[in-house]
Image (cartoon, rainbow, N blue to C red):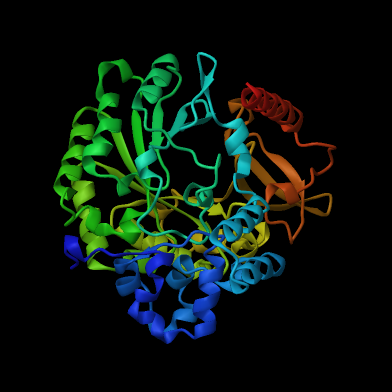
Length: 448
């Protein structure tokens, strides 16, 4: 077991200090460094020593989840940043080129930057998002990093240092003031980054105010975290791990439903004794653990992997929640699979598990209009179609109304789909009006 002082974060600055990198060729190490100029890189001692099979690193899913590779940038982008690095351009010029490339990678998908930021008394609250009526997302500024970065992460701009790209707030008062004014909100999701990178003392400052009677309408508090997968010692041996467990107990005792939204992308991440011990400690506080992941090429694009993952999660007392489609951002071209492939994987995996694992919904696209569930593939009048529905939507009246899209075996995102037998999807006009209004308000705010 790791002790507290054994934690080591690996970043581009001390990348070469990882002993196992001696297995890589100089070319491979060079390519990792070049891609990391664009896509943020960070790993840690637990991931490197406990999760990666270095005898087979080139095929290892956890290596691919942590170490950027040349294929994660398209050729034009890779050549541009590689030329700048190899010609000895100064740091300012390299950063400029990297930022220009990043802006071409759809850094804020699904309208996050323009459509989801709420207002209070005419002022935008830039550390919050409010997309669905019942749910507010809060981004505590001290939690906008992670124990290790996933190469597929759709929130990679949080770590890039680009101006205007980061959601973050140090002001818990903004959150509480907004929640007092919005009684329709029943649950708050603390997200990032990873809020569990913060000290327990800091986390307490954000969470404890919600236990006040003013917030009786807040039934559920969720924490989105990769800590169980990438640093389970956060719950075991960190200097304030006992305080964290006590905080969880306090929240549950106050009558709130506390859920840890755990990100597991592969069964390897739930294979160590440390993660199993951490899961037990968390569950003993009364906290629920729900699991989610995108389905990704090179990582988990296999029904057998998903079935194993769901079975193991249930055996450990966790609840499988979502199989997502990889977001259309960053290295999407490297990880994405077609909607048809994702549906086949989900259906085949689902058929291999008991009812206890069948809490999981998938495949699901977290797109700008809402969370769109691919219900199935069917035929109407001899023509194949995708059957879709909203699980969550900007307008809750859209939820659970089936709608159809023309079958396209190469489609990998909502924007690749066309309505079947209609000019537009039933929700499209209203969504476009919402989008125009949100963008106009955002532009007006910037001009102010």
